[in-house]
Length: 290
Image (tube, rainbow, N blue to C red):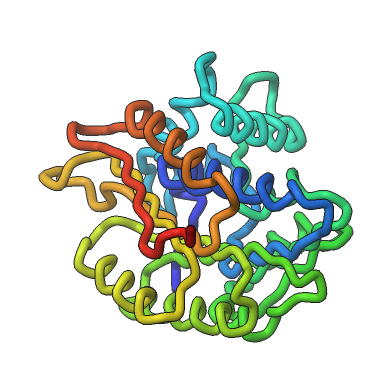
């Protein structure tokens, strides 16, 4: 595995994923009781965007200008997206960026840490040693935060159900292996067996529609509770872009999250489009019970 997310940090997919993650965390905090936030593929936690243009051996075009860069200075951000950008600004300030300079970007661990209450507990799984070392540097001394070398796909079996009996599980693998979708489906099945009431958020890239549809078929073979599918594309099917969009499957979405997510994605579809044909999509894979 040679995946390094800092080349992609802050791109359109991160904007979609992290904005929705923030709303899920906030929704779970409507109840006073704490919960476990489990990040199965955490990465390094945060990113210096100046590295994004360096590449491994050759300079490369950074992706964040077409993502967070488009939202950074906009005065008309809707609720939810405004709160997401405020989190990114807070992280940048903590890292010492000059005023109003977009240099640092928070990964999902920092999004969760910035929003966590004292009663919430965070577990970040990262198998890659160098990425995990960076996580340890970021969070090793933080209260109620655990950095784990556990293989993220085994995390639901190892860590659910938690003592809190409430959980938000983010499954966000690099999708480099051919069997990645199948491994995600098995992890979801194990999670639902151990804690069927947890909220599961599964991010996926839109590169091959057939693989995504096969993944949905695997999910629908499980005893799924209410399950929401959300997608954002930045270009149409005829585009030469390798990744034209991304999606998030949310199992057991919190009350009213579907409407909030739909409004955010409709706005992002216009703000982040790179070529004609970009759009937002939402549908229930398994409808909410009446």
